[in-house]
Length: 42
Length: 87
Length: 320
Image 1 (cartoon, chains in turn brown, blue, purple):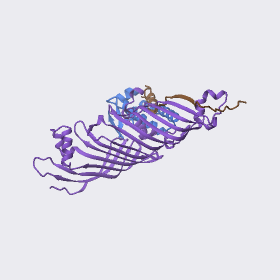
Image 2 (tube, each protein chain N blue to C red):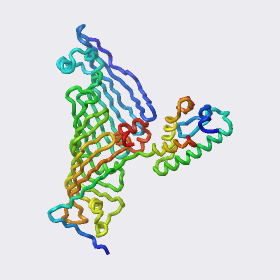
Image 3 (tube, helix red, strand yellow):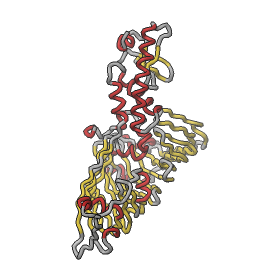
Image 4 (cartoon, rainbow over the protein chains, first blue to last red):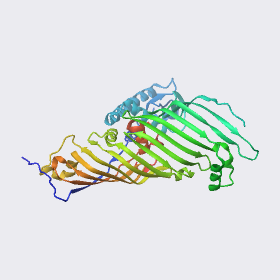
């Protein structure tokens, strides 16, 4: 089995750097545009 | 008949609910069939977008209607407040 | 002194721009004209007040709106001070209509999740360009408040700047509004957000928001992952599963209509992985959007889709 690890850091804290991009895209417009750019439908 | 010629002749136009509509009531039967056929295909596509975005079909239709009217070239018909108007 | 009798000006004004904006209001008010000497400008005092009405912007309803426009008969000192400071000889400053104070207050049921009260006021000078001063905002929302007092002197709209003070804003409510079920936060934000206008858009720079002694639970898989030999590479996510922070500092490097650049520092520990362990996060959080974030914030994800194209993407062309 996998023993769970305990993190008992001494004086120095564990420093973690993270980059979070987070794209906020409101998509409906694009999907609808695609439908309406089909010559058989528009 | 095809979409562009039917629109150019002012037989059909874009409605605010995202579907095609007959501008004249004596439109030839092939134009009527075309409108029914295109509307059915559009509805199916709108439903797919509604499902993937988990929003109501009516919302997608509303946005499509706005888009279609925006995209309509001048001289073709669009439905404004329930009446057909040449853009 | 010519006195105009107070009375109903316009009984009911219904403005229906498109399906996105509808405003119905009743306006009433009164004026007193004061023309004591021939050469002196007409001095005007009075107000238009409208209440018990509503504004619906693309589905988001503001209710109990109180809109008030007030013309003060300028006291001789205040008037001259403006004249001298801006432009002594200018016919604008003599017409009575072009200087007034606008007060707008409204209650907002924000997406059914937060009852808010907003009060905005500003002095307007309808010169060319339009100038404003004494800009104030006082908003009660998210268990806390936003406030602003800015602009002692008249400034053209595109040079408006100030500092928004943030007080006791609940992170728990923010996470509910963000509707990201995998992320739950607690704690209260306080701080200052300096802002300025750049080509017509609100921009923030060098702001700082901080919170103390809260908890962040980030569970992307909806359940906790055990820290084992295999999962240790995922230490960041594991630590954030139940992170008790002592200090959270969110430095807002810059922010505009379509994106923000935050440098967030968290100090604390995750009790599940070590009683007296101590972890520090340096998070570079840069949300980017293809739609105007202020409209998204005001209207929410559903209603913003009804906004027309130009407004929806205003300021965000490059992110499209």
